[in-house]
Image 1 (cartoon, one colour):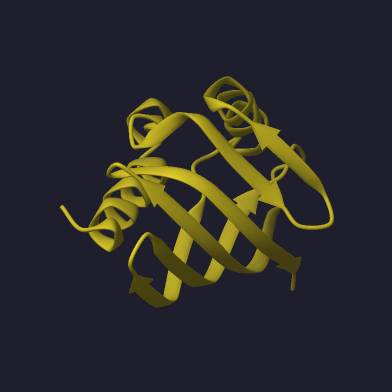
Image 2 (cartoon, rainbow, N blue to C red):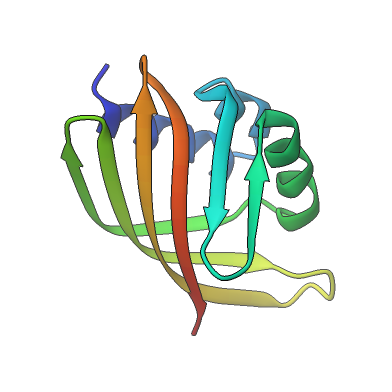
Amino acid sequence: MENKDILIKANALVMAGDNEGFLNFCTDDTVWDFVGDRVLNGKEAVRNYMAEAYIEPPIFDTESLIADGDFVVAAGNISLKNSDGNLIKYKYCDIWKFRDGKMAEVRAYVLAV
C-alpha cells in the first residue's frame, strides 16, 4: 500500500471513531508536532490526546494530498466538537513522514477559522 493510501485509510478509521485502528498505522515511537502548541511523543501520548480531543469523531475534508517518497502532505479542513458540544472548524496542513509503511511523524499546522 502506498503512503498516501495508508493515510486515507487511517483517517477514514478516525472519522469512523476507530482510534485504535488508526493507531495501528502509526509507529510505536510516532511524534506529533502541533506547531506552536505541543509535541506528542509515542503512541500512548497520541492515544491520550485522541481520547481528549475527539469527543466525537473528527470530520476531515481533505482538499490536497501530495505524496513524495517518505512524505505525504495533507491540507484541508477539520471539524471537531468541543466539550460544550460546539462544532469548531479548523484549516490544517499536515506533513507526514512514513517509515516502513507506518506513520512515524507529523508536523501539523492548525488554525481555527
